Amino acid sequence: MGEALTMREVWKANHRIQGIIDQTPLLFSEPLSERTGNHIYLKLENCQPTGAFKLRGAANKLLSLTAQERKKGVTTFSTGNHGIAVAYVAKQLDIEATICISNRVPKEKVNRLRRLGAHVKKVGENQDDAEAYCYGLEKKQGLFVIKPFDDIKVIAGQGTIGLEIMHQCPDVDQVVIPLSGGGLLTGIAFTLKSMIPEIHIQGVSMEASAVMHESLKKGTPITMKETETLADSLLGGLGPKNQHTFPLTQQYLDESLLVSEEMIEKGILFMMEFHKMIIEGAAAAGIGKVLKDTQAKGRNVVIIVSGNNIDHATIQQLI
Ligand SMILES: *Cc1c(COP(=O)(O)O)cnc(C)c1O
Image (cartoon, rainbow, N blue to C red; front, side, top):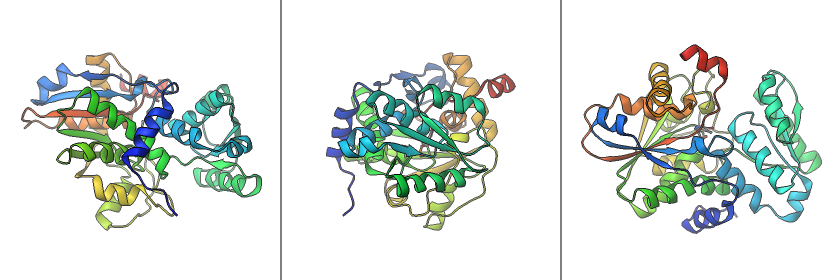
């Protein structure tokens, strides 16, 4: 029997993860509002202790494991914000975490994971090798795989952002959400639509490899080749047997939009210049999209600023 996403799950997640996550600020952006004619608010998930919202889903999932599951340890194959979040929460809960990565992952990232106390297992030449190895660990050693998005507990964890938005801006008309696997979008959209059915949910992906965008058009999950993008946290497929996030995205998303690399870059620079914050490409997608939206009409728009995991070299290049 599969679990279902319910408001009770989201409220339970909210209760569970306090103490690990921070409730993040909702910042009114005067410069973005002035430029666009809407009232623009920024939900600053870049202010989480790990620098991204993924902490919410990972915390909810790890805190939901049984004592036996915790004892065996957990594993995952993400090198980005999800891997960091799993390592961070596992350390706090005294759970052993093994992060499987390919040999091509930069040293900087490996060191960060090791500093968080995780075992780092290097295998193969690409992400698929790491993923296969990770599921091998599940089979052979009974480690619990913490999926990055296609899991009800993870989705409910991300949904707690919706509860905070409801509290901080109950008059919200529209939410702009970076979109990859869809855990972030479906969690927030499900939560807010249960209270505000007429709210408008926009998903934003980069033009480069917009897997969810193309899958929605086709009506079924597809695979695509990855191209280089500033929004690297939005790369990756929907998983071979997507159970939850694809159908939920079909149900709860109102509009799927693409953002060019140029606009993502403008989004990053806008945050630096006007709000003195450094954010990553994926998090700047919504800002880039809104900067182009010039026929606005006084609506209350919340943009999810999803994370800050950007490397020095990229920042230097952009400046
Ligand atoms: C993972 C991630 C996203 C996309 O979240 P999904 O749940 O995969 O759609 C967006 N921004 C950042 C910074 C991320 O790490």
